[in-house]
Amino acid sequence: MKEKVDYLLKSMGVVPSSFEGNRLVYTPINGTEIGSVQDTISSVKEMLPTIKQSTEAFNEWKNVPGPQRGELIRLFAEQLRIYKQPLGELVTIENGKILQEGLGEVQEMIDICDFAVGLSRQLYGLTIASERPGHKLMETWHPLGPVAVITAFNFPVAVWSWNFALAIVCGDSVIWKPSEKTPLTALACQQLFLNAVDNFNEKFDDVPENLSQVVFGGPQAGAALAESDKIKLVSATGSTQMGQFIAPYVASRLGRYLLELGGNNGMIVTPSADLDMALKAIVFSAVGTAGQRCTTLRRVIVHEDIHDDLVRKLKKAYNTISIGNPLDEKNLVGPLIDGSAFGDMELSLSVAANEGGTVFGGERVLEDKFSSYGYYVKPAIVEMPEQSAIVKRETFAPILYVMKYSDFDDALEMHNDVPQGLSSCIFSTDIRETEKFLSTSDCGLANVNIGPSGAEIGGAFGGEKETGGGRESGSDAWKSYMRRATNTINYSTELPLAQGIKFDIGD
Ligand code: NAD
Image (tube, rainbow, N blue to C red; front, side, top):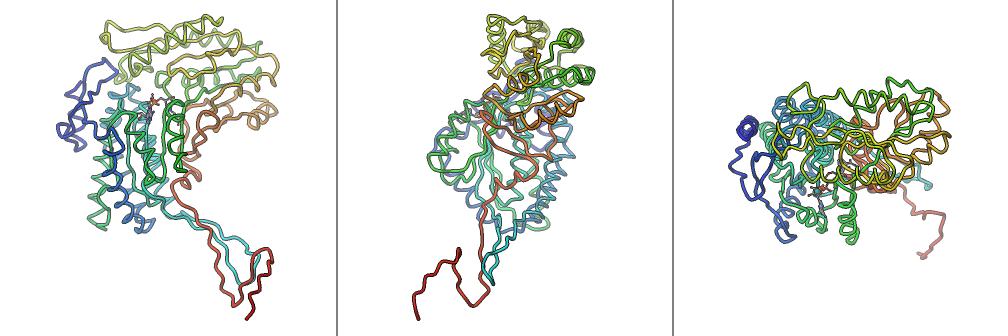
């Protein structure tokens, strides 16, 4: 597998030996080593030169016109189009998601780049009616500064690109700290960006050095970025615990953060639902990416009249799912990221059983085929008598809890009664139910007749409550990467005060 990784990296212009170091990287496919990187940062002090370089790059880049900044991202998207296959394969090998999803992740990068290119000509503010004669009131948007992007292992490249493409067209510089579990894909992305910079500089020659930097390291590297007041936005994606750790650091210096944290996504299935559609949506969103998406479906709340039928069909569908090597196109479910993820899954299933759940599936499989370090599991369905404590927790593995309801209002209440608020959905053909759901769900994403996962880049992505409140990607998420100024311009010969205040200092 290492030879294959070296080949993929080299095909994208990365020389793996130039980055080798203390941190070993393993593929979840069979647990073998596929490379290594050198941790660059472990303390605030070590981070300072990187931040200084980023500030210098920002001071130049902010003066480049927006559409020209968009051109750089257009050229980056060109690289992603050329190298979609090797980058997608590398994502699959390093992260374990099936190749279709690895390629889908790169497609998502291309999509956000295209979006950002258009955005680079649309960074506009409002003009506002002034209450004073001869005055103009408007708001303008300005580049913010160095942005730190901390990412999780499960979307090793797409989440960075959501932040990166917007930050670059908004005139910011970026320091990326990828997950310590997926640094090789970060190396590849950085190289593809540098290729785009070379192409850009042939025409304009004004991309400053260090506009994009990648730092390797564990939580300390993330914390060092969070602490520095030179970092104008900390955009961090990961567990709720990580957000709870980082937020106070940034808040203590009154800095700005954007948090994309854990989810515990639910679906309500009502008696009028198209059950075949619901079934397909449940299976894709519960077992896709081996249950390791922030938007993975974790809770189904189904009406008691259709509960048994749905559960029977679900179990039948689960029995047909092919689990195995994610590079093999016939498989729909690859491995968990590592043994610790499997340990969490086992623990949650045993707690669920203690809390009255009936567990179907969940056992480890294919141990003999992929060595004891490849953690493949049969996705689990757990019928729960109620929404107990374990159901309210996010276990980052393919566990689907199924609960019954009889009254629709109770289903809505149960749906919202978890600490997280990322994605949600309803399957129903009754417009009264669907509209009530959309106005009641307390999540950042609320869908009708479609599962909770697999969002498009055009909308703002993120969630409420313990999910952190951040919004990334489409819509007006770009505003997080810019500084807003309200400007009042007086083109009259008088100096009238707002609110009609008189303040006469005489002649
Ligand atoms: P994680 O929290 O273990 O790590 C995420 C990143 O944060 C890594 O780069 C890690 O090094 C860093 N980090 C961890 N602890 C830190 C600390 N104390 N200080 C500074 N940095 C720290 O998460 P993970 O296991 O990589 O990813 C899975 C989690 O991410 C799940 O909870 C999932 O729901 C969440 N996630 C959320 C979204 C979203 O958009 N809401 C997207 C992807 C993943």
